[in-house]
Image (cartoon, rainbow, N blue to C red; front, side, top):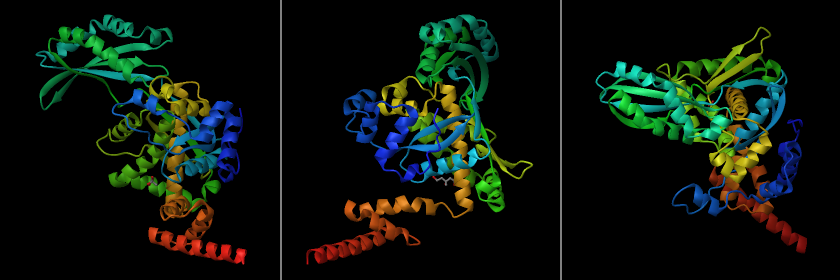
Length: 431
Ligand code: MEV
């Protein structure tokens, strides 16, 4: 396995970067061509994936470097339009390496499916009636997916609860399914739909919803790492990060933004690997608010050596098989770059990225602020919007980057100035 540090990676040309990733991950010539050409999903494939398709939406795909997780090096593919996120993850992973990188783990892929039964006169007894048929219901659920059973997964448990709602008491029957390397939404939804009529008969009420829950608390991923105080930026930065964490723990307005930073990393890896970003967001934010108020998904503390210790624990329902992870060519390629063997390993890597992303955001916020990191790419975007052509782009960006703040008007002015001086230089060349 290669070394994910790849020093100076960001300074390479895009082609050189692709070659470096290809060497690290053993990509084929076709895969290299796909990245270099920006090829991916074809319109025909897209048309089969969704409805009313009229085109494709492209996003930048990058790789975060430096990740050492459980002693193994990873290059982490991330698809995201926001500048600085990938650089931030790479920088944080570099700091984490000083003390041995990340430790990470994830639960089995246990996914919960819910069946809602309304109008049950004796709901507590109804739970018992349904559970008396537990083995039979598990068998019927498993008959819908013999392949999953063959690979050691399948429905493993059935339970029931009575809840009070504004529409009266309801019986909720819950099926727990090990979906192995799939995210598992389709598998679980099929199973709960299959057993629902029997549940309805046993319970003696009326079944309404039959659907998986995105609050994936049976599928948690966790990571922790020691961030060397010196490499993190010194004592004051460490104290600043602890203050920032305390702020998020005490205030929901800050907590939402803190967790948004965590999700920058999670969602970018999820998008790159074809996973369901909405499911992850729903699970993470609901989990963070389980106690009745928003809690930070990460925790920060000091160890006895004065280094910063970060940890994260959050639901992480992801797969490496099925859905877009298998059908989207770029998702397949991203999984190959990442080199994960199982959904659990992917969830572990994503927990490490979540922690890295949060460390990087807090460090930037307590040091120079978040805008400086954004500025270079922001300046480049503004320069292009203001009409900078490739021949003058670097010079326009260089001059914009010298400004304290950059606006579109600045970009227009500087494009004009650089163009005039280029024209003058061209004129004097001819004379
Ligand atoms: C920006 O996308 C994410 C941050 O706002 C996260 C945070 O404030 O912790 C920088």
